[in-house]
Length: 464
View 1: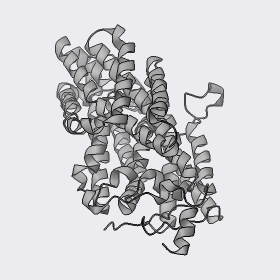
View 2 (view 1 turned 90 degrees about the horizontal axis):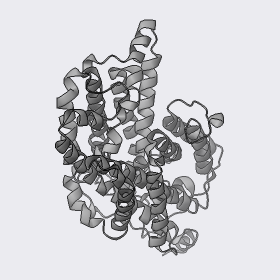
View 3 (view 1 turned 135 degrees about the horizontal axis):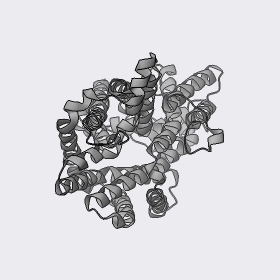
View 4 (view 1 turned 180 degrees about the vertical axis):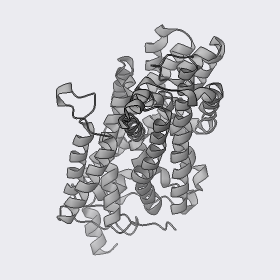
């Protein structure tokens, strides 16, 4: 190692200098890793089951479906593509790649610790949805709280000790929600185009397009908020890809097509169920429509199947949280840190806080929207590559995140009503603010210096 490299490594934490790029021998085509991973996220029934609540009653079917398509495109091109290219190009994980945007020290907090902490929010959402579905499937509401506790603890334990044991099962479990979605489409799809919500009819009569536009924005915000952390995690997921084509194809199939398929079918099914009078106009869950149409026994099987298919996702959230906490808090026993996070997840589920999906997705979008925006600009300013770790805390990244988060959280229902501000499509607005502020700060010279990595961990691995 040269004197220059020795000095550089001395300025970088060990978690950066010890990182090794994922070798070519460990990489595979997009259809074996990237696309299935992302498609599995969107097949999770907690994502698609209540999608019609985001604008269907307000704007009608077509504006809502257009919002779904636009949401998928935004997720792919703005939130996923650059992190994916950084992952495949460097072969390094997010907590290392993120040091270019937030600094070698700051990267431990952002996105390192934040990614881990928010995973317990996801575990809470997963626990709530799964326990609720099982309680309904067994027609025993009293099981809900015990199921919350058992589900979260089991997922945390597997995530800590043996996520590899669920890997093979997880390969086939997504077939369950896939079949359920097709059943919903067959049962209700034929009536969907007859759906005429009161709100949409009123805007048509007055010549106003506000309802349709608002429906599109609500749908985009819900999808992007749900996806934001998974977009940044594209660094880790695409480390297993071979080249830029894998990143692109994996995103098109696993993100855009998967979003349109899952959310689109769910919305069409609910619209058809409403139009045919199977459910009341205020019903937003496709599973509620299925309950009205299927026999009690078969519906119970459906809900139990959807829940079982959710378990690998809960384990994966715990696994990411554990890895993040092991990195940022190496001296803390992961059973302690993950155990505390799991207790928080159980509380979120039992109290019903995790059921407030618009607020949860809004918080996640506000947190990771500006991260993805700042990473995109940092990538472009570096000439379409990873700039390498920056010293300390990179001011441009932190200012961009703070202002973007402020904009993204303003309309969230978690805030008191007196503090809320109606920001349109808040997760995307947070992304835009983060990107613009990072660009301005970078041009004003508010970025800390880049520190070369030692030769043993090159900044760029071949990606072509």
